[in-house]
Structure formats: structure tokens, C-alpha cells
View 1 (cartoon, protein in one colour):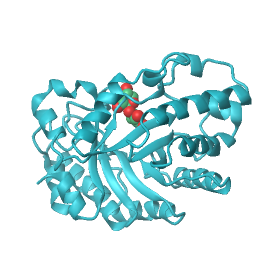
View 2 (tube, helix red, strand yellow):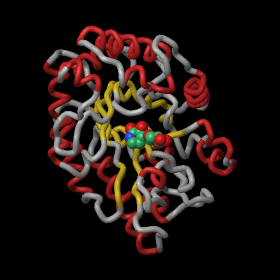
View 3 (cartoon, protein in one colour):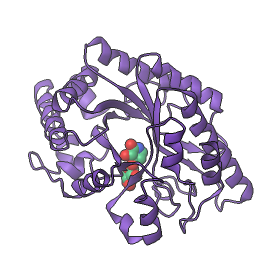
View 4 (cartoon, protein in one colour):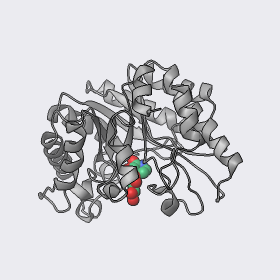
Length: 318
Ligand code: XIL
């Protein structure tokens, strides 16, 4: 059973994964990663973030990201490109600079137009703004909000649309699945952009989930429909379902399988849910253990790249 082939037969555009330059050091993992029947879409884990692409002002470095993008395109995979305007993994010159409305506008325009211009025509989608919300639905404080107030939302999408008219422009965030007030915050942002007459095409739900807390398939579908009601596409962009406590056991692995199934099922239930991206697919290639101590085993394959119950449930459903 190969996930991308099954997902396409089920009506999705792709089933994809995050990838990083180090993946090639693990041969079995890398073989799965490059099998277009298993993964039809890549997102660079870190290689297209601001600190990677423009570490100092005006000097852009594209080598690592180009390698990933070129590998995807030569294998006829789609690229989700990630990400332009985000508070995290910003280089110090941006995060600790003191910016006025005008100087921040120039900094954003330069970054967006240079980066999107470089990858023009190669990205199926771009995460234009990432994680602009707190869990209570308020706007997260960041250098962009500080300089520009809520006008930075439409401005980011305006610069993005001008830089590459061939790509889908997304707002992307986490916990939209869990917190209705946060999900409504993303509705507010999308409406602000639309009201400014600027294109926005989709909302990405990161779906960094926790076993035992994942909403039901019906509730997830309800959340996805909040965005499609605005005329937008939706996608699960960074899916993983972490287990705590470790070690996992057969009952937590079965629960995880059911929760993966609910998430994938909700995407199948919504015609404008275009695809699903897992944030890595093997338990030894995961950001979770170092970010959420005590949690892990969040992926579809185990540490030896062998399929887990979650892989079986997802492939059976697709
Ligand atoms: C994570 C990467 O996987 C880690 O390697 C890095 O240390 C931190 O960022 N939301 C996002 C992703 O949008 O970019 C994050 O990726 C995970 C949470």
C-alpha cells in the first residue's frame, strides 16, 4: 500500500511529507521518501525558513532549499513551500531590529519577492503567513504585528500574489483542530485579506496532534468546513500524532491509528481538502521528542522505517 497512489485514487491531490537534507543518511527511510507512489509532495522541514534563506540582510542563500525543490520536481512531486512571514526561526537582524511601518514593509516586500521570485512556478502552494494566532484567537505578538498592526496580513498576501501568481497562497497554523476560538481567528485573518481585495487560496491545518486529544472525524470536518465556506481550500500540512507517556504500547499505538484515521477521514469528507502532509514519517525523524519532552512515536513508521498500526489504518481508509 503506497500512500500517495491511494490518496490520489481517493480524490486528493497528494499525500506528502516534510523532508530535510539529512534524510539521505538513513537509506531505508530515504528510499520510502523518494518513492512517488508513497509521497507525492514535499515540504522542506527548515530549509525555506527566513533564517535559512536570508540570514543577513540582503544576502540570500538558496542551496539547501534548491536541492529539495529540484529533487521534488525531477520526481514529478508537488512542493508545498514553507514559510515566509513567521515569528520563529527569524534571523536576529529581523527579530531584534527596530522597525517602523515603512521599514518593515520594505523588509517584508524584499524577502517575499526575492524568495518567491527565486522559486517562481515551482511551488504548488506557499505558506505565506505561519502561526499568527495565540490559542485564544488573539493575534500573536511578532515584529510584523508590532510595526504594522493587523495590516500585515493583507500586505503579506499582496506581496506574495505579486511575486508568483502561479501558486496557492495559504495561512497556516496549529491547534486550529483543537480550539474553536483559534479556528475562528484564522477565519478572521482570511476575511481581512479577502476584504482588502487580496488573494488567499487556502488554510493549512498543521495537525500536530496528541493521542487521546484528537477531535472526532465529524468535529474535524466541521472545522475544515469553516474555511471552505469562505471559498478556500484546506489541507493538513504538518500531521503527526504524538504519544505520551513513552514507551508506546499496543494500546496507545492502536489509539494513534484511530486518530490518524479520523484526521485523514475528515480530509476525505471535504471536497476542498486538497491533501495531507506528514511532518516526517519515521519515528526517528521527528521534531517531537526534542520539542515536547516525554512525547514521541508520533509517525506512521517506526524507528526502523517499518509501518505501524497507523500506517495500516490510513492505507486501509484511503
Ligand atoms: C520545526 C522543525 O521540524 C524543527 O526541526 C525545528 O527545530 C523547529 O521547527 N510548525 C511549523 C514548522 O510550522 O515549521 C515547525 O517545524 C513545527 C511546528
